[in-house]
Length: 507
Image (cartoon, rainbow, N blue to C red; front, top):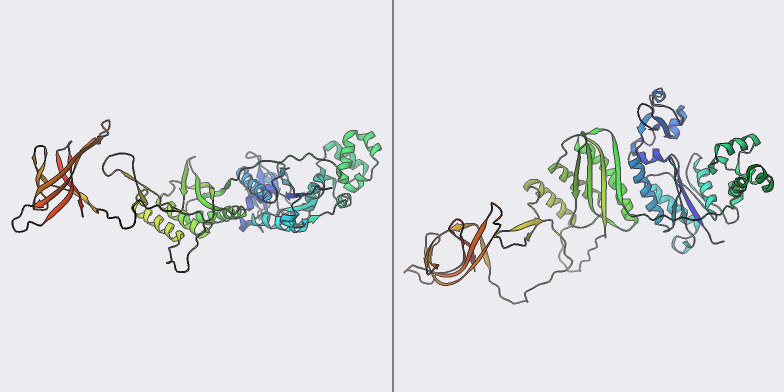
């Protein structure tokens, strides 16, 4: 036999999905209510709540008899996020994973046949799998067996105890390992449970010892199937699922939050989970989109994108803090979702004698602080627009370029241009429709050479119509005391307003 399966079972999944992001409530008696008010019933609870006398199916009114217990509402969104995180964890050990979850329990089975060279023995693999689930703040039970159903039953039976852990069954010992387990691990129908209860059969070992022929005579073919399940001999057609990596964490708040510090404390826990999930795939967080559910049914969405992907928790909190300070929500917050886009981890290799470069993380924080002062869209790198309109550009976030190409060869001389901001208005004298002389900074210049005009115009369909002529002039100061003063400049003429201006000086 070459088959080998590892089953991950999470008991009280609705409760554990809520406690993943609420670690401060781990040791308190907690029950999860499900249903429409006022008919909510307890669907999941922890051992501390069970010790007080709380049981499944209790109503909210009955829960009020236990003032020390905390009641939380079930969150399908947080359960979906927790289920996605656990399935991602399982896929880190094998691409063949089957989801066997029920309404209140998470169960997945991993086909680990042939993974010994990657993860070692089944005991070593089980320990690694348990550490991964614990990093997700989930208490799980893991069972490894050569039979699919046996591993599932063993994980469920093991999780019914007081503590979670690992159980590895040697090949051929499935029947002996399943024998002490109760019949509840088989998900029997109510009719079969009643029948076995009348017969006095309560464990899988007692069911496995029954004669197959007599069992088929009384229960039909389902009797044979149940006996095979109890002996760990039932075949199963493995149906692997296909999942897409989605780094998302969702949390619905118990009460509205208005203070930014309280919100950042909650985000810190969610960021820890996103970073753990990204690091398990050897990835980093490239951007984070924050969706805030506000009172009144509105939402507030912000996206934070640093220069380089990273997994620095403090950096992400600082960037989100600065962004929310500059763009605060307009109402109290009822829930939040963090959606991260993965990216490759950044590596920088410096030479022994290379100068020290600034850390990209510090640059991101500095730019965020500058944006909070000057405003969004006023800090970054300038990118020219696809138009001939003067001064047409936009500001984009800084991007790290892996390689830079130089258009000019070393030693090539270039003319430097100094742009005048703002442009200076001048009086121009024309001769034959071209500038002959002009007065600039209280000094008259005579044009020696004129190049142009270059005409440009556009946006006739908008109020911001523009139509310009550009001249490149070489002029000499019209001063008898000094005939060596030359001026090379760029002169423009606004045809819409009949205005001459000096735009730039050439050195």
